[in-house]
Length: 212
Length: 279
Image (cartoon, rainbow over all chains, first blue to last red):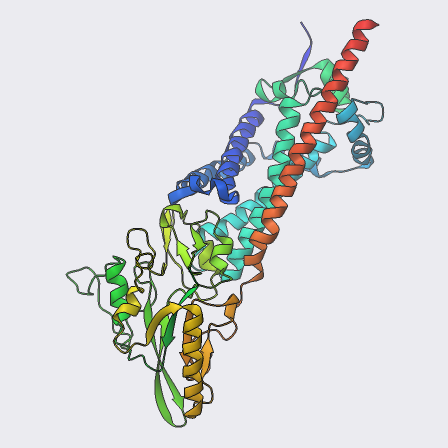
């Protein structure tokens, strides 16, 4: 049997699916207000109720994770926000890598490559923007100044456009891209092959195998 | 249908509030007489004005103002309801098409389509739409004057004037083609000026691209509590003119880009497979 290494522990995987499931529901129920032709689906505001139920999961899941594994979460956040010279190299090599499979210019990556770090940054930054503007719209609708409410909607929508587009990229890379063959496994049963780990996350693979 | 309008002549209004009642009656916006038996406490606010404000079941109300001018107290009456703007902020932001411009130029409202988002409430420069909403679930509906075009209660399609106009005893409210109403209003303003009302003016001719409720006033609009220069906020315009095209552009470019990537990367992967098989 092929040798495998654990990429994502179970709590991380549970967090991923709860959080992303909530986000997809939030995205779709929000989309109904964005595309006039789909507006009829939001009739009577039931999608707003679904939106509000989903947001509870969206907010609670990462908070619960933070409470359970604060150190681990901090480590991940720290990693996502530490950028170096190799990240520039990744950005330069990415187009020819993702289109043509050209690996030779790609610097070895840690457990998170630059693209994944970027996605973490978007998830965290826009998650916070979504929640702040959402709280304004939900709880301060009748008391906040009109301009604040209108700009909250504006910012909420900008966040929706950017993170929505990146969600498409994320799903595409995780599920459809011809080279990312093991990304799906890593988030379902947590394991990837040693071979894949070495090719895609060379630095990280070195780190975890050095002690053995 | 030619553009229609309501003309309100504040100098003829006696503030009988018949229009308020006719509006409620025709549009089936029932109200309880404030008594303890009805569960509504009456409340003396020191004015004949009643109720306090526009509400989901009050689409039209008369406002009373006491203004001191030249040592005399004047009692001014303002008709508060939807102004049916040509450049309507509410229509601009409504995501579901529940608010739209009717053939007569006024802002029609299809309550069935309303999602209760309340964007129109924030976008209206006249503070007219009223939202009735459960604050926890977020389920609710907006309400406003429909120019008597509510489906099933459509007076305009039947060739009648709106209920408020129909009932007005001193003919302070008139209804007809907008051009005719403008001519009438200009004539009245000229008469008022000739009588010495130097501030007399016609309100609504050009405001926000032209309102479909016109006002003949004997004093400056602000004396009547009307905004001198009503404006649609930048955020109202941004929602449709920035967010919408931006969203389609970014979303479209992402999907097209990913599709292209898939085609190129798959072709490439197949080629490599072939090369590997050959060697």
